[in-house]
Length: 362
Image (cartoon, rainbow, N blue to C red; front, side, top):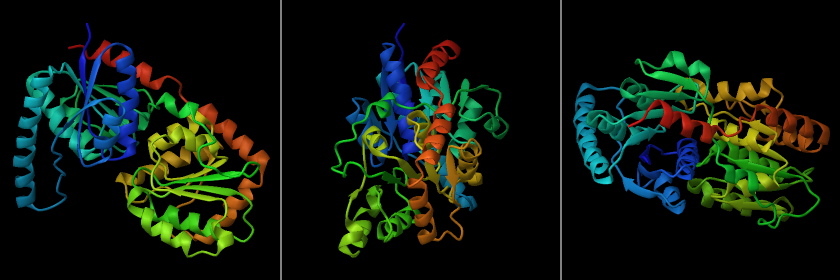
C-alpha cells in the first residue's frame, strides 16, 4: 500500500540533499512524499524545485543556557508540535522521516503524538541535539557511521546504512562553465552556506603566480558579493581562468569539471566525493558538534582519498602552494580518485527506502 511520507528537517545541504535522495527513492517506489522544513532556508527553495510539496514549519532552536530561555523553548516547541500535528493530519501522513536540524523536531514529535511511525537519519559521527531528542521517540534510527550508535539515547532499532547520495551527481556536464580545455580545474566549495576560510584559500590560489590551473569557486550565497569584490581587486592575470558563483544547484556539473576539490568535510559532501571519485583537500569546520567534520575527513585521509588541513593556524598561501603541487601530480590525483571510489556505497538511498518500509510500516 502506498505511503504518504513526510521528510522533515534541513537548514544545510548536509541535511537537505540526503533527504531528497531518500525522497526520490521513495517516490520511485510509488509513494507520496512531501517536505516539511524552514521556508526561509535551503530546503524552502530546493525541495519545491525538485517537485516536492513543501510545508513551512516553525523550527525552535534549543537554548544552551538560561532557565527562562529553556522554559520559553518548551512552550514554543509545544506550539510548533501542535501546528505540525494539524499539517500531518491534513496531508494524511503515514510516516515521518527526519533528517536532522532543529526544524525537524516538531514534526517528529507530532508524528509520535499521533501514533505515526517516525524514522530519523543521522549523517554525522556526532549527532545534533534534534536527533538526540527525536531518537527517543523514533521507531528506527539510521546511521551513517557505526560510531554514532553510542551517542544516541532511547531503545529504537539502529541500523548503519551510510549517507545517501542523489544519483544526479553522477551525470553532470563539464561544459557549462566556459573554463579552458586542457587545464586542470580546482573546484572550491564551502558547503551550502559557504566558508570564509575556504574562500580565503581560493583567493590565495588565484593569486599564486605559478598557477597553471583553472578555478571554479562556489562561494556560498552570503559570501558572493564580498568574494567577487576581492577577485576584482586582484591583478588581471590572477583573475584569468576563474569562474565565481554563489551557489550551484546542479553539483553533478561542478564535480564533472573538477580534477581536485577543496571543501569542508560534512558527511554528505564526503559521500558525494566518493561517489564521483574525486580527490580532495578537506578543511574541516571547527564550528560543529564534537569536531565531527575532522573525524569524517580523517577517514578519507586514512584511505588515501583526501588530504586534511586543520583550520587552526591555517596559512592560505601555504595551502595554495600545496594545491598547485597536487594539481601538477597526475599520478597522485589518480591514486586519490581510485581510493575515493573504493569508499563509495552505491544505492544507499534505495536501500534506505526499502528498510524504512520494511521496519517501520504504518
